[in-house]
Image 1 (cartoon, rainbow, N blue to C red):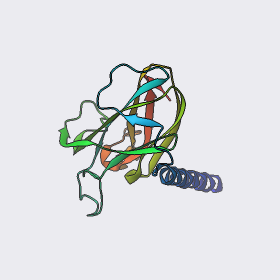
Image 2 (image 1 turned 90 degrees about the vertical axis):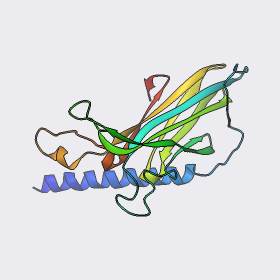
Image 3 (image 1 turned 90 degrees about the horizontal axis):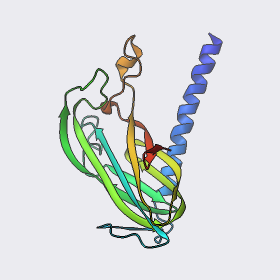
Image 4 (image 1 turned 45 degrees about the vertical axis):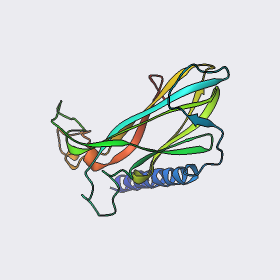
Length: 196
């Protein structure tokens, strides 16, 4: 019994520590320290020598607005994706629409009524290695990764949500079931098709 209580305490502390780290990373990354790291592109074109293009894209789903409180930004245009590259920050506003998906398989985390967000931005920056922070401040979720851009290359950074587990996931047969309606607990990042 004591071992079980100790394990539960350690797990709780790990979760609290993870939340504190995300909060600190979001706070540090929300403001720009530099303004010359990247420029936003309206159309691509040829990449000049010494530079590289980076397309950032994400699609995720949240619950409708007002479900949990009147101040909740989920399901509204104020729900943003924060990108910070080497100290230059930009908050992306998503295109959003209401969506009702029928389950495509037994454990479809995006089945049901909610709001679909599509985030995207094309950037041009110097070739080389860069520190990238991707965050959803409203969900207190942030990740930090390093990427290396080859000279003259065209690259993609895809961000996918990791949804929280459902209350049913604790019952036999429902292990590992997640749902967008429970919120986002993490982010999965792929760079040029490879997991980071």
